[in-house]
Length: 101
Image 1 (cartoon, helix red, strand yellow):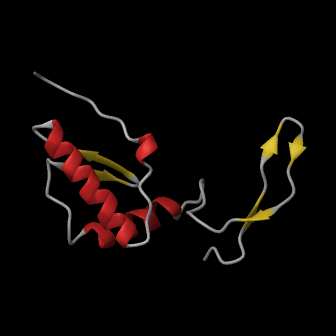
Image 2 (tube, rainbow, N blue to C red):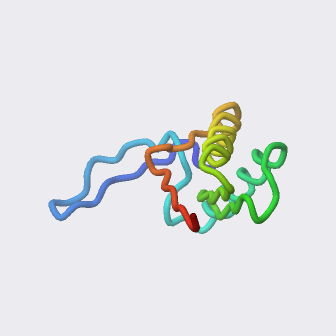
């Protein structure tokens, strides 16, 4: 579907030259959310834990753990499993929220 797809960057100074998109799904495409859900479902089926410990929404993941060590372990498991399947987890975008003690 995306073979040979090209895009431009729009700025206040005009559009850039067109360039080929080689990774990812196209933002704004009606099919992109559905495609990523199908892929994430298939890739994570063998290693994910059930609700409420992991919530997957399109390409966002919420991991819930009782301890910080458990959280780090689960995040690393997700990262390793996705890496092994050719997907990348951006750990720089990862946020942690602590609730309770």
